[in-house]
Image 1 (cartoon, helix red, strand yellow):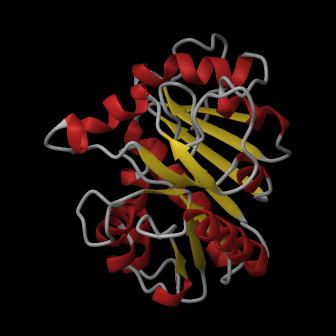
Image 2 (cartoon, rainbow, N blue to C red):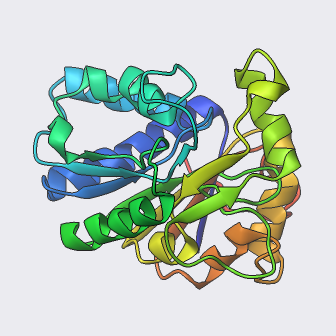
Image 3 (cartoon, rainbow, N blue to C red):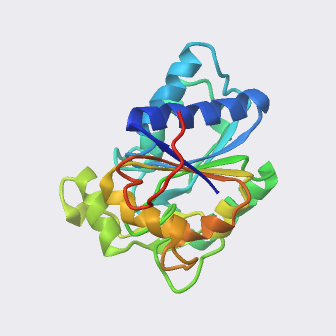
Length: 248
């Protein structure tokens, strides 16, 4: 596990974007695992800038998103499909046929989950997976539990997650209570993982992820077992981990 503590959210975003861009430059047909939420927004902005400047070409790349809300259509501004289009896909030259996001409106959710796993396998697996982290230590929508869910699955969102996500909705009553999420095994099979965290509200989750025991009660703690994981954070998110590795 490589720990990178940087001075600011902007610096974190640029470094993360450079990692993704380097992956695509070295392997143009890379399979990229993507996350949503506030944390990766700066990274997506930087990737758009790099594409516009001619630094990186996404035409051969494929993407798989971690998750999607259940019961929200693709054209709903709160859907992760909509988020990805507006924040990244509409601004780069990615082939739309190579974009993969779980279908939150699937009538047969179990079938959707099985087919999503099959798509990842058929693509050859994920080369680089971007993660955020929830205040309760969730990655994707893998919430704290008594066991690690291995494959793509239906999730009942924790109250903490619903409350945290309510800031994006007009009312907490509008926040979906279920989602489809990649499982821990999907994530851990990625060749490289980059987890991003910023803000003091993530400090406790980061501490438990890096220094706590490996437990499904802190889903991100499983990353301690991955062979190539980078945890990149700003100083606020790193405030509880003590002696840290600072990188310019």
